[in-house]
Length: 134
Image (cartoon, rainbow, N blue to C red):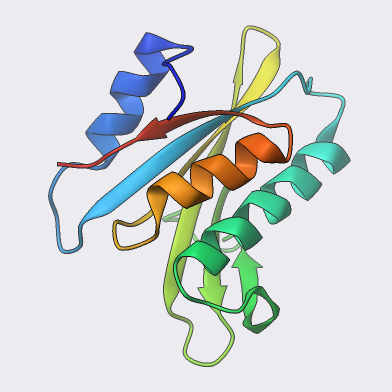
C-alpha cells in the first residue's frame, strides 16, 4: 500500500471512518488538478468510483453518481455512488481543493478488496493513499 503523502488529510479521512452503522475503509486520490479543471476532476471521480464499485462486488454499469445538489445534507463537491436497482450506497467522496490542487477522499464499505483496489488505481497512474477503518 502507498505511503502517506499528506498526514493531516490522512488523519482527517481516518476520522470519517470512525465506527458507525457500517465498517468503512477509504482512500485519498491526490491530483494535480486545479480549480479550473472541473471536467477532469469529474471524470476522475467517476473512474475511481467505478473501480470501487467493481472491488465492492457491484457492476459499475448498474450504478450512478448522486451529487445531492438539491439535498441540504450534502455539501458542494460531495458525491455518492449508488446502485440503480435499489439506491444502495456504494461509496461517497469529497473533492477538496488544498494548496491549489484537488485531493479526492473516498470512503466505502470495508468488505471491498482494499489491496486490489489500491493496486488497480496505482497501476492506472493515480497517486493513492489507503486509509483503513477501525
